[in-house]
Amino acid sequence: MQVERVVRHQRMKPNRLVLFDIDGTLLHGGGLWAGSFVHSLNTFFPGSEMPLVKFGGRTDYHIVQECLSHWGCSDEEIEAKGAQILDFYLNTVEKSVRSGTHHEIEVLEGAMGLLNRLNGDPRVRLAVLTGNIQRGADLKLKYAEMDSYFEMKVTGDDHWDRYELPAIAQKRAKELGLGEFQGKEIVIIGDTIHDVNCGKKLGVRTIAVGTGRGVDRDELLAQNPDFFFHTLADIQPVLKAIIEDLA
Image 1 (cartoon, rainbow, N blue to C red):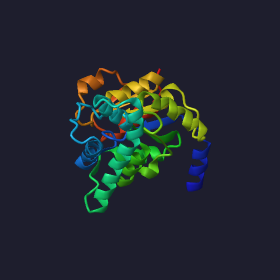
Image 2 (cartoon, rainbow, N blue to C red):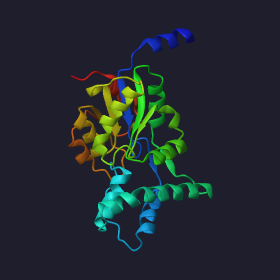
Image 3 (cartoon, one colour):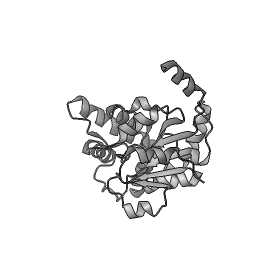
Image 4 (tube, helix red, strand yellow):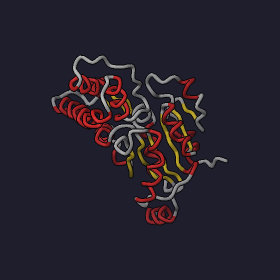
């Protein structure tokens, strides 16, 4: 029976590329992560007051770019310092964890169950689409024990502009032999307006979840995602939203 199921699954062509955001969708990072990010900025630019920058849905590079631009840095300075700031940030996180501080990753309700259900579905390819740089994404998924679920990661290393990432994911999936996916066959699941709108730019299926911290739910719904769920806890309707065909 097991052999028959494996053979049947091998013959079934994947028709969904499911791209998960990380922060606010699959997990929450505690104060260690945000605090280390701000600490890194302050280390390189001591005495500079943090501008009012919204972190949610932005790439790490975009956040750094906006802060340094606010502080009067040139494009050349931003390019030179950006990678150093982000490297220092993640070094700080890892050092804290090694010294005994908990990694402060909270897996959100329903996230692991949804991944387990999708992971066993031959119609689906699982990937990450996140504003985190690659190293940060790897660390968060490692601490959440989720890393093994994903066949591909598209991150802030691939482009500083979140809105360019879906097209990169589509192209990379083809290059890696995961499949050729078009339109609503591509599914973005995220918690911010940027997750929804970067997907709409490419005409993909968008599923918004109301688990993001500091996200205005009315503003999120105003972006008209294809589906909205308060959380991922009720797995069956989310699965249906991913798999069902849309006109």
